[in-house]
Length: 127
Image 1 (cartoon, rainbow, N blue to C red):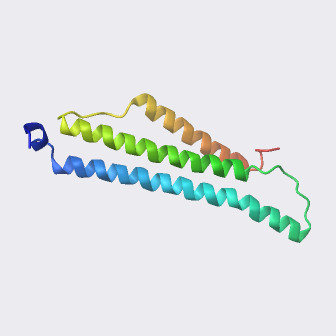
Image 2 (cartoon, one colour; image 1 turned 30 degrees about the vertical axis):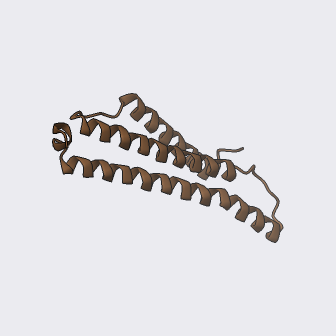
Image 3 (cartoon, rainbow, N blue to C red; image 1 turned 180 degrees about the vertical axis):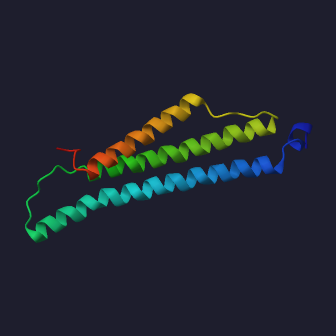
């Protein structure tokens, strides 16, 4: 092993792996939750057909659930990329910080998703 690889601390490598696993858990949660949301519209349509209730609002569950699942895939890819960048940086003896622009972009996207969920729950979205 070279000098640079010897300087990599196990705690740093393990912290990078824990962070990657957090990305994976988050991605799976988005994908799973997106699937549940998308399937809710199917349940709603079946219930309306059985109860003979007219459909009064446009269906946003399927596109929103699909968007959440796609966002989960993006989170998984971002996590894999971030893991690789951090691992290479550690092996070179450098700390590679997450870009503030990427952080703000992700926070804005999550806030947008949260706002859409809140508006949908209040019945204000899709009217």
